[in-house]
Image (tube, rainbow, N blue to C red; front, side):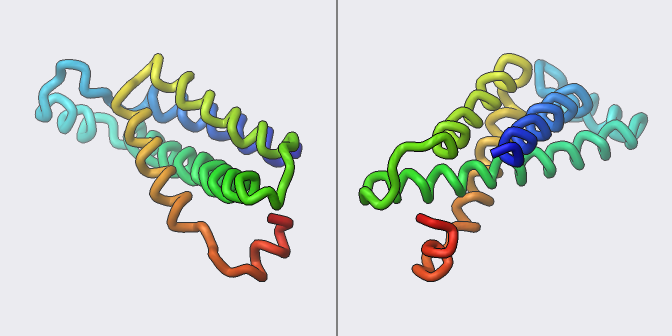
Length: 131
């Protein structure tokens, strides 16, 4: 439980760092974004590392949310605090969308793709985790 709260905190900090360090597409041309990349490469690199870390952190919640929702619908699991924490991770996206819509949509897309591709359908693995 504490691990999940810590991962949410890391994803919020990483997402906010991503939004601050990557240039947004708010009326700028591609040339101005490219010149900012050349003039300040460390800031861009820091933003990309934070973006990747945030996408992987949020993808673990996406994977867990999908698996637990299916278990809940199959009546193999009851509603508990773990499911509530997983669903509350979507509040991160609401926090990010106020700052930058484009980066939030990209985070949502990448974390969904990574989360869905990490889902395992083996019954033994799911039984080990209690689903």
